[in-house]
Each structure stands twice: as C-alpha cells, then as structure tokens.
Length: 92
Image 1: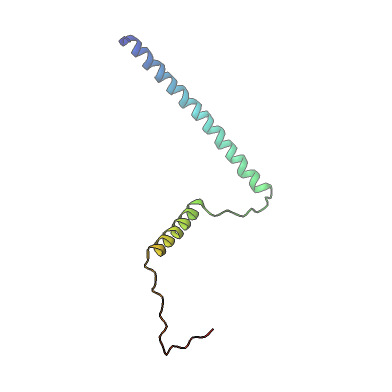
Image 2: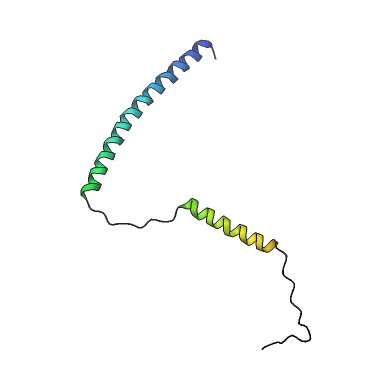
C-alpha cells in the first residue's frame, strides 16, 4: 500500500468520524426530547407502584458471606463428644 492510499484511508476515516459525531449530536438531541416527554407523561399519568427487587450486588455479597461461613464452619475442628462419667445422671 502506498503512502497516497494510506492518506486516502486517513481522510476517509476522519470524514467518517466527523459524520458519526454529527449523528451522535442529533441522536443526543432526540434522546433529550424523549426524556422530557417521558418526565412530563410520568407527572401526568398516574402509575401503579411497583415493588423493587433486591439489588443483584447485595444478593451476591449475601450469598458469598453465606458460603464463607459454611466453609469456615466445615474447616473448624469438630467438638469432641462428651463422655459420660460414672456419677453423671442421664435422662431419657
């Protein structure tokens, strides 16, 4: 590939970037307009209250803590069984 072809590719890339920036500006204006309408409709139209689900990061932390506790409990030495002595009272 020659330097001239490289330069043509660079010009094409620069032009494409400028076109995409302009399209993004137009889309940003459209999104802003839609957000305004959504806000206005939300204030006018009553909506049914919907409960919120627990946050996924909270669920992950909670489950990780449970697993860590289970692991720690499994790694702890088991308590030795208590031996019954001759004068201990055993109830059934």
